[in-house]
Length: 429
Image (cartoon, rainbow, N blue to C red; front, side, top):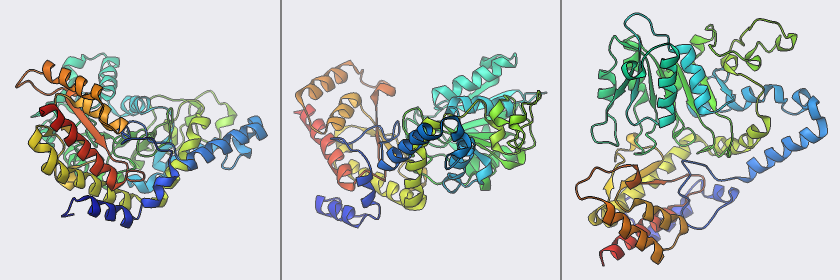
């Protein structure tokens, strides 16, 4: 993309192979700024949710086997359909719980400190909930999280370097846990390099893919990840309360899940109600209680839309959207002060771009409403006045701008950059 004029941008929308998908979603005014927090509702999700509700009304308890597909196998079926998105085998995936509860389940199984290997390695920019889970799992083993949770610092406060993470993989580390995309800065880590580094050092490794599944293709099996977790309500648009997905590499199928529950039982004998746990010989063995069928139902429709579009095409457009914004940033925004936190390299970018600026919150509010109002300028001036010159940027000064390829148009990217420029110029006037 060499040109960023509005006519060129409109031409990009006209040629976009995903343009037709926008109509599937319920839209709102302004640029939706929470695609990486909660995806929009699509009509396919609405239909599958309605179908499952109807099955409940028609079959009642018999729906566990009489519905189509049977609710009894719903978690495995829905998760298995995600296999092309993450480079896994269907039986290595299961749907249930939340990202954090799935992480607890995986850590309880795979974090086994012994001898000198007692530390759980994370990065300083990991999502807080992941760190909470890591530290609590360390404490459950009678160890001090302050001593046994090894945190790799960031050099600048919003990016991580793979060489730093690998250098920290020493003989004291039992397990490493990293995100795919940093939720604040938008940096995409090289998971293959990290997995190779861990494997060469005899360290188990897991990943949190919450900010990448559905917008970045993965190859979990090929890189040899031991486990992974992710939510389904961001780029997969599964809706609030949608259960999360857990990936267990098949080489661990013989391992007993540390947190057993009746729905993780061998499906052929589950209703025998035997007194001792017999895990299913797949990732399904890591399930716990009965699945949240109604919460899962919208995902069937929404992820079907993603699979139909194709993760390769989605990634291509995602990079084009963020690439266009970076060009506009260089031309319009950078001269006015905001600092780019997201890497420029295509293979280092996830689905969102982050700018650092004292008035980030006011800029975000303006983008969401789609129009510059006096109250936005007033709030921005207050934020500028409160920011000390030379101070380190904090979370409050981060403007995260997500682009969802299935419903974000190129013209919206252009409008967002133009609106940021307009507001920054108004603040200088």
